Image 1: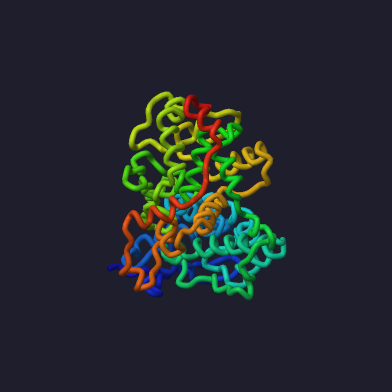
Image 2: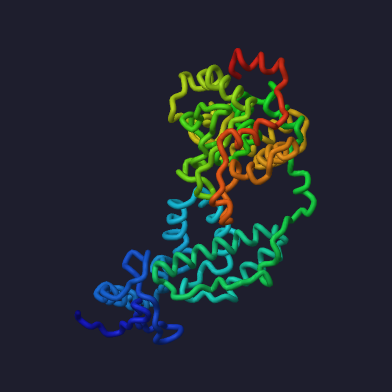
Length: 397
């Protein structure tokens, strides 16, 4: 292998020596010519070409930003955000956190130059702005993700993300009293799944969140093939959150279908769904896809997976129409679990339907029959208003 001047190996990573106007001779991490990854042993020829180009830029009196590829801002835009976009549905949240909090502080810095004190400056700015503790943690999580990828790409051999709760603060709610009221009563849930003031597709959605005790993304990803006819209750196979192909916990769950939810789904499949979309649903069709638009502006396409923002805005509209105070879509799931517990469901058995199975060794050797699981759901005492049932069974809204 031909040797090159000005190149050295550190932990199998290649570094190059450059003469900079400000700091004189210094070693920097050698990157691929497209700026997306660090070079390693065996790629000395490319490192030499990188060194030649970088030195030419410096000799011309220009900044060694190489179009910003090595700065936090450039690396975020060209590598980290596209990487997140392929991995997680909520990649836009990380993009916003970096844009609002990280880039204004350290966006112009080189990836290899960021130190723990710089990360701490970002976090203290967020805390100083009185942001919720979870918002601060989410900002820090985005920074951690960026530097984790930088290490995988060979841009660093360490991470500046070494903050503890002393710097991050305790996890908690910004508004201390809201969580106690983040719940729907039995009567409120009945109104949401029954009232003609609520469009048909959303009554189905709320019933699946409440009586099905599913997370919003799990309801959005349900397809008709996930509804399986069984006795004593049918089964919902919870296999994906939105269209990611997996659930939040990565574990498939089986949820018994409460008799009221079963009736709602049957009526929706027979009348509501065909009226909304102009044909009978097939096994691979979403149970509650995005309906036809009723307003102008950018929106999710008809028949596609409804997103979190779409569902939240419609819930607030429906709560206003019913004269109810604002709450989150996730509070429907909490209401369903609470009602089941109040009506006699066994906590440990119900958990097998609603959450990831526990890792306790005894639980790994314990299994319950389907009838036992169904009993935890069928015990919920809830009904729909009779006149609404008769109206919705005959026509779609």
